[in-house]
Length: 461
Image 1: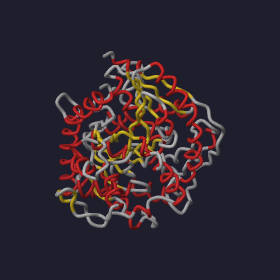
Image 2: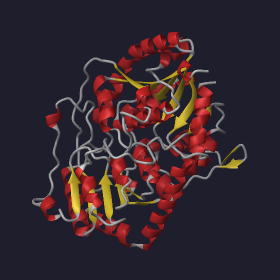
Image 3: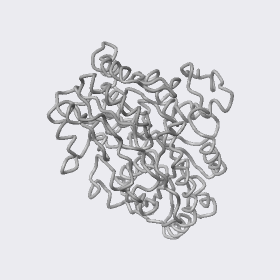
């Protein structure tokens, strides 16, 4: 069978952590010489290509990836609100709703491809199920749900929905005590959007996770015992495990080249977090007073469209003369930072993170332990996985105290613990060992490589 008899259509939710994962997966699948069609609005496709890291878009099989720009009606793109009562990026809700306009252009593409191919395989973000609902009426077409969160988070959701049984098919369910309540992690408006996608679950032929059985094998296995009779593939990490650096290098990488191994703390809270001015000041002072080396990515959450009114982005303020005072041991990055390249650098000792799943997977892959400061969504539950199941991280900010200010003294003490305690050293060693295992899982004979090959064999059957 010629591989071009089967084509893939990727349908991501247009947020950075979602675009990024499916573009990385596109690269992996394209190495099997299978054409991939990546769909989105012009600006969201532009964003995905602009920010991709770790591989060369002009090679690495990317000639098999074709982008389709679909225009949709204008939608509101308000800036993030630093003073909002929760850290959830509610300013992106109009973006979520606007994705419904992709349904008809996506369906038209699927019909065209179906007329030219033996099989069309749709891989869609779980939050884009309504967009691909026409799959059921298009011949030669099947769909697979991509979960952008951990298998642990999805298992918890389904397990709780059936009453938290202590065992499944004779296998004990081992979940840490006091897992954060889901109701505290999302606003009602977003819950409604998620629930609206469930109507279209019936069109899914299986699930894909950006994880490795090396990390979450027990939860992948437990998911298979929940009775939906659908296959689950753990084919992560999607991100490259060996990094191709872009040239010229980002200035922060030049700075890292001059630092000792395991001497720098990387601080970043992702693309959907916005801090108050007061919290930024406390974090700045705490980092300075810790006397430790750091790279701090300081920027507001993305808007729904990065390229709309780009000059109207808030520039968070730091204490007077701050960057000059810390220049010998700290770098503040105010624009987009190459996170994967930073985490792969030998000088990075710890990652102070919001614990979005994308960041967790990148950090675990590179063997960097995580200091967890969860903000919203799946992040509080990812913190449980990182700190209490995998034991490759420490809690920097307790989720139960999320409404309180993290003071400079708390930041200082936390950072000093990361860089100067026996407990932190043990965790860093464990993270390094897990990173070796995860990278190995994508190599020849590895579990994730076998899962990827199994998925490709299934869709090209």
